[in-house]
Image (cartoon, rainbow, N blue to C red; front, side, top):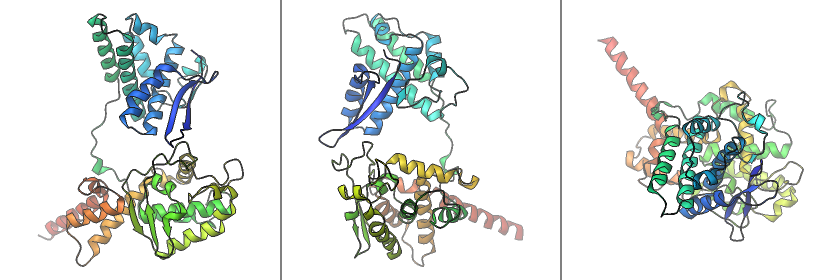
Length: 406
């Protein structure tokens, strides 16, 4: 097996996003990993991201086997499965911070334990996929007429691999402040202000675009996939409305890793000031990018180069958020999704301040519509934890003061 393998992504004629694990030197697809992902992930109607994640996990296994000179297929065929010390070494290997797409480092670098480890969640996913893959591969390679003992050992091996996954902590998620404080939001407004001395971005067009992206996340509470999927035609400038639409496997989207809308289609109102910001960006900045005329997506790349005028990718979006996050210790936990939690907190505060607010069921219906959740799904409650916690703390302090007066 080649010492270098990579994940190759492409768009099929139907618009479906697909990826394959290939030998980087020959560009030849690896048979068993791709068969696994096609039959077990893609055919289960899971997303492109799930396919890419599975291939990334399998590539970690293959790199481990290459470093240890283990012929996994031959070992399974002969019934000589991974030994206990090899399973332990595999579990340790899965903790290393390896490249998820290109795995071509030299063996001497693989076992450099100065390598920064990955998060427990990543280790958990890697070992889960690897266990599933090895068990699937064994069932495929070992004929049904073979000894029952081999398949029994195969199942035991998969269990041993899963048993080495990090223990998931049952931490009370209601104790986690997922939203942003008002001071954090004020700092973000200053960072994204184009004229600000602490704005880290270069180029007037990029600064205007990034500010608009921030404003839409903040005021509409939409997800990254929803933001990057917006087309200019989705905006009704005369009525101040915007359509959030699902467009899976969109043929006109040149991005291989297509941003997806996970929520339901919906029509949202926008403040006139926000509509003016969008109009200004479209007319004075987006319009100047010639390549932007080939597609309808709202947010485009303004940096000169081969991607100029192309729709903003998920990678570019994440880079923007990471850049902002690094500017201040106050933003150490900042993510774009935190703005969605903040929107829900503000929604709760607004409903609570009304003279005749809707009851709990009515508020949940309103929130679910605006967020794109199915009615009665219960998702609305998960985004209201910080507000509930603050209200509970407020009541608790009042109770304590009442006791002091007695």
